[in-house]
Length: 273
Image (cartoon, rainbow, N blue to C red; front, top):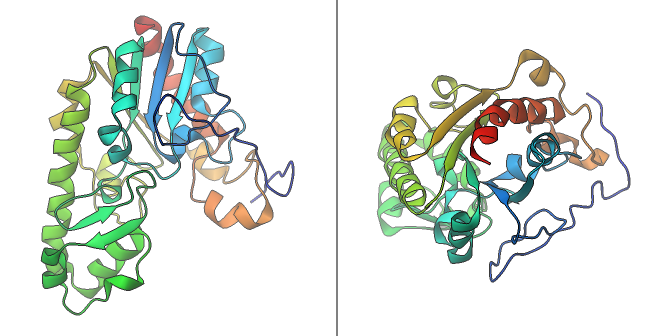
């Protein structure tokens, strides 16, 4: 495993906001007055630890402004609840939606932070009734909570998992229905849907092929990019980070995968932009 650090703080992401949105995005801030492609998603789209994330790679290749609306640990709730971001899609030549895990979204069992969707806020009375033997005050992150609930009782966890899947499909259908222009659903992961579905630790945990088939018809195109063996073996090679960041970065997709994502999207976006 190797890493590269430009400074103790790593990359300067030049964080910025657009319009009246309260979400901090990766900069530099781009003009929305000229033709552009909008990219919505979580940490992968944002390009944490990546010098040139895939929207930047595509901008160079396509010659069209590519605006990065990815947010660190953001889920579907970020762009489902932000009126300004929905307005952006009406101006974009095309909108790319990176698929994110159902665990990072509010549902009948728990609430997440509206902008940092991996942050657990509170459990509902229903979830507390199902797991009376769990102290929810000890959880700060959704993944930690869900792992504990599954460990305590796989049987009781099934209704929770079912709710995550049902809520995700409904939320994604809502988001896609509100995009007036062309849209691309993007699966970008080190695992295929069949592998990620039942792996609670997977970046796209709980998303099944059947769920994708329910939402894909609402998008103009669907692009699925699963990391190559080379991308998986690269680890943190080429990432820009400090030594303290290595444990977190080792779970993320590196520069090779970002180039693979760009290669998967380019032919589709060339036809749209």
